[in-house]
Image (tube, rainbow, N blue to C red; front, top):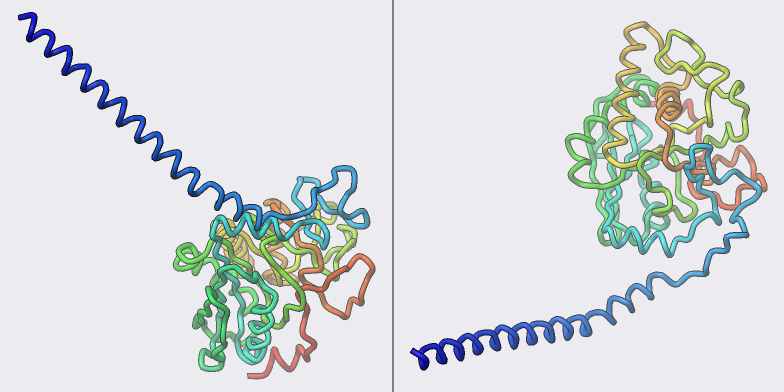
Length: 334
């Protein structure tokens, strides 16, 4: 009996020793893997994140407002570091969609729009261009950078340009559910009769983004061209309003864009039933929505400029420019 007991003790010690050895070998392997990969990761981060240290006692801009009363940043040249932002968004592998509506003769703007976007818009990031048009055959084949795609979407033909402008909210809303939600993380909605003339990158991305209208910059709220008809769903009283936002540049996550466009479309339909048409069509409803659903980021007029407004001192860069054209001729010609 004593021999059997000794054998059992011996076997028990052997099993314990085997477990200890296995644990040590596993620990050594883990450390070897850490040493193998850790320096590469650190090196990659250093390569992406080289930048000057921010100085807390030196504001980036003192000539313009850079923070809204609800703490949303207002993006101007000099208020951000693109090296940091690009590194952060690359880590997330972000996909960006950009929509334009090119109906009737507006198809003539598509080529320059995309050519300049390839040079300046979200360079180095994944981008999908969504072109809504009633003339699919007029959209040219365009060479794009790697990771960028062009999607052409057929839409109905409307007689009035105002109807095209207002119906785009309905189309963006519908496509957000059917397509955008599966293909991109952020959506940027802009006018097609524009060109990119300077860098526009991930600094514009946020949950909900509005752009300050260049013609209404620094205008008192009572002078802003909000919809003033109390019967309209776009109505904003003269003693209300933060900023006047441009309908030609807004964006956000797909969920937030769906909410915005859903509100605008439903409000338009309610007004249409009352035979009311807001003064600036979809832009009026956009301003109503952004007044009561504050944007999480605001873009300065750098991101939507028209040279008819001159070159004021506060405008350090003109990133997205209106194309000079005969509005009447373009809007009314078939």
